[in-house]
Image 1 (cartoon, helix red, strand yellow):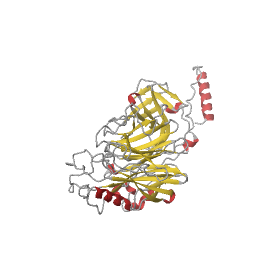
Image 2 (image 1 turned 90 degrees about the vertical axis):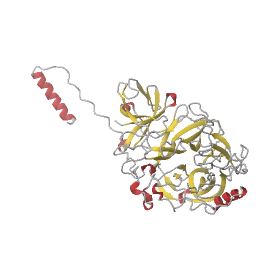
Image 3 (image 1 turned 60 degrees about the horizontal axis):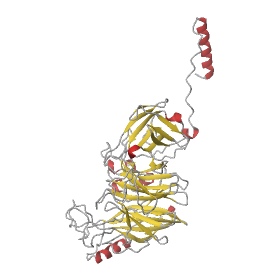
Image 4 (image 1 turned 45 degrees about the vertical axis):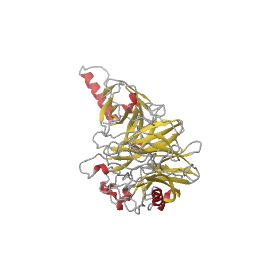
Length: 545
């Protein structure tokens, strides 16, 4: 009914009531029409590529992959305006094999990614040469055909049109005999060391990189021949620092630093020569090391074990807060993988969590930044960590990592091997802690969020740590009277600060953002929040009605 017909109907009805001796009260006004949707939001088109990418897994369909088959990503913004992503060698069905290493992508908008292919055609000769030179000094036979793994690079724009990429190559052979790492070949020794190397480029668009060789290798504080392992159930590792998972930072003073490490005894921080990108101090032999041996100083360790569930350090500096931030991946990468963060005023530490725990010794550091989770009516994500943190040069920060489907998703063979790259926006709390948004980045217009939009149902997730558990959502309803009527916080009040885009519920500050609802069908824009609450608990949520 249009406005003219409505007025005619209303007038006729009023006259009829009067003629019949009816009430002379004013008629009930019509309900107001809902506000017109913002034009930018109405025109928004959400990303359409599938999370279940099994239909496009063959190598010949790689141009359609977008963020399919992403594992341990690193992202840098180049001078041409593109973001370049590099990664560990991994793909569903291992379809990447035989096509180079450290595969690359690029994007202008962080949503649509163009596949560029392998960055390194084959393992450089220096890896085998360095390995066998060390083995010779250990009085061990050379390994003629080492088995290699290509893991977890880090890429940075260092200015002046130059780019650096540090990479890991792992040797998967036993130390004593040099035999390939299989159960049948176990020779009562640990497997061989890993190496970190360096490539440089002035043409990331052409994916052209020049190898600069050896940087550092795995090292031990034990003797050079103390590599015995009684059985495969023993986890008192030979190596102290495992030379994988490098992260690279140029600090405000112009110093160049490399942090690295995984599982063994923690993370090492090593200062580099800015010109060569190699260690500022020539390392000693990789056994009987101390803090003065040139392999770095320890900046984090999950307890005191020589085999600990932490890896993938990512080190950044945020000029706005004045802190260095150390992100860490905890636990196994299949299901329980989760992300933590600690911070320090100085690059060498000490790094402390929000809970006051010292990352150099604490078994747990809080807060939990990401965790296995699912929103309702969706399989959700697990194995959700090994992050990189980057910005656009204009104060906007992002988190990128892998995430996996849970095991045994109906209709998908080996569903836990599905690895999708996730890029998410970061908001910073008022006291300088990074919050990763609860939905992936979808380039939604940043239209100001109004209080009226907050009224209705939200899916709320307590993202606090629970080993191997995929955290699920409950419904929280915000009523227009400022009360919470459904959910864990039912009966409490809510309020909204439009200037800071912070929703406060039950005295918890929930930091809002407009993001894509990736679980909706069809996908569309929505509102989301992330928060660190009392007792350092982590919360995620999204608006659903």
